[in-house]
Image (spheres, rainbow, N blue to C red):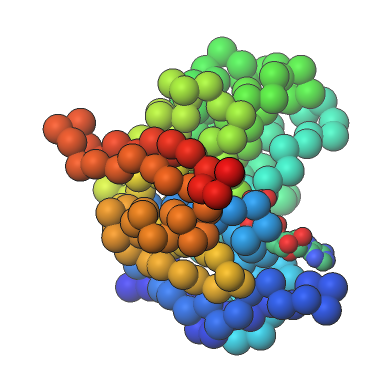
Length: 253
Ligand SMILES: Nc1ncnc2c1ncn2[C@@H]1O[C@H](COP(=O)(O)OP(=O)(O)OP(=O)(O)O)[C@@H](O)[C@H]1O
């Protein structure tokens, strides 16, 4: 079953074409890394898929009501600001709103989902801390927890591991891989191609205003794609530790 289907999705911003004719589907059990240089259109593609900005073509999420969409997909935007001193447990509980409604009492299953999500991001003990008193990385993890607590078939996250320390980058990717193993799916934009290669089951490469490649890390992180789209040379190998990727040098410099 497709959790997201895009057909010929096209976006113009400021009278400029940003994405043309993006078509792909995300099924159950996938961890999809959306990669591409700065400005390639990763955020734009995800926001258009969610129906947050106008786009041509078709997104399967586009026709859903706000509540249906919030039950189908958890969205973690790139902005990490929390404007008021809400406690971490209450911030994460906001992820339960699509299921219980704003006025319904909190059910033990909501509390269990929140506690599990807080534990998954390593914030146990921070439940009553105001989110405004967290470090940037801790706040990012609280927002990941809010998306996890939403308990949706699909999670879409814009650079969720940016700013996290190495251990939390790995545990976050492992948490996402765990969701995929359980039949849910995650699509995240990501600049760390090493972690993308290691943890994602599939990569979608954006460049030249379109989907340039879509496949396994080995199929997408080819020398030709890296040179043409990222202007870099890199090392990539399937090893006993799994896929290993390292950017080496900028080409033409
Ligand atoms: N409101 C806007 N009006 C005009 N152009 C915009 C607008 N928002 C974004 N853009 C442009 O659209 C292009 C795609 O931006 P987008 O944020 O989707 O890229 P990205 O791949 O997510 O980049 P990054 O890796 O830097 O986060 C960029 O060239 C950007 O300058």
